[in-house]
Length: 505
Image (cartoon, rainbow, N blue to C red; front, side, top):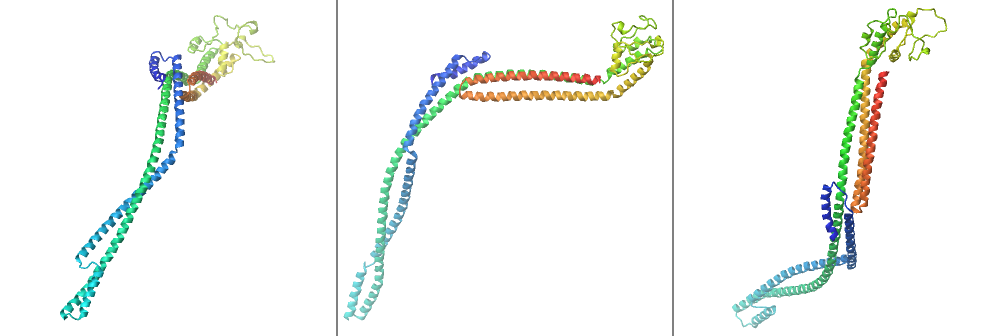
């Protein structure tokens, strides 16, 4: 390992400990220069080893190891065949030699037992005995003895003849044994020849194997250099991975805090929507009807206000400005025209081209405050033109109140259902927004991971680009979360406005 390459892992370990103490600071320029120097030295070493590998490969190709191995295998097969053949020949020779010796001993024993060794000796003895019989000088007893002896000799002749056959067989076996011994000698010569060729090929293959061993050694050196380079890159990237992890933890903490904030905000909005929806429908309208009924009942009885009016209407927060008919205005007195003063109110009056019969101003004079007019419009009841219309107005208010009471439960349930639907839609929009942000984050994380892998095998510039991409992703995610908050606020405002509109209707 080069000196710089050997020292870099130690620097990486020290840098790692310093990074933990200094809240993961970036490496200094000197460490980057040492890293690049180590990488260059390893690259030069690998180039030199590759050049040596090329030379060895050329020698191996010229040596033609496969052809030598093939010839060696052929010689080995021939040697095996010769050994097998010699084994069989020796076995056959042993058997033939045993048979030859046994037959030779038997022939010798038979000859030792017999008086005559050859058929010629037997024939000569038979001729000799026959001549004695032909001479006529023998006695009958001697002649019979000689005749019996001749007969015995003729039988013995057959036995002596078998000696010749046995000898012939022994001679033939001797020839076969000699041939087998000659074959063994020839095989021995071939074996020596093959052994010599085999030893020559073995030496050639040993030289080729030396080249292969050298090639293996160089390959291991290259692998070691590559491993050293990988360790250096890993040590260099470890700090950046820690930076990425720290950035991810910060992002996760911000994300969790943001999700808690959004969840609490959605819960508050949902609680407000449910609270607004749970208010009985037409409650304000019913209060308004009661207040107006009490108010208009004060005008019954010659147009004089009931002295109990303030007590009757004070129970409702209707903000009705009641007429003061006792202290501020004399009985029968009316206000001036609207054109002659700056009061902002409306006086109901019928327009007719026909002349009307004069009426008593005390009974026809009728003035209403602007708040009363607005409340009559709210409950959709016609505005009385004069005191004579007050009875009909009270009846309309009672009918309107009955309508509100009859439909109060139904409309309240409908409002609750609409509120739940609005809350569900709000939750769904929030979930979709979270899924979108999560997919965007995962997509950018995958891109960051791919870039980190390329960094491990190339240069450090790509790692810096990856970190910038991660920061861009965080900015994009923050913007998406701000947009999601704006959507939630708009949804909440829309839900409240919709609820107010429904209550007004």
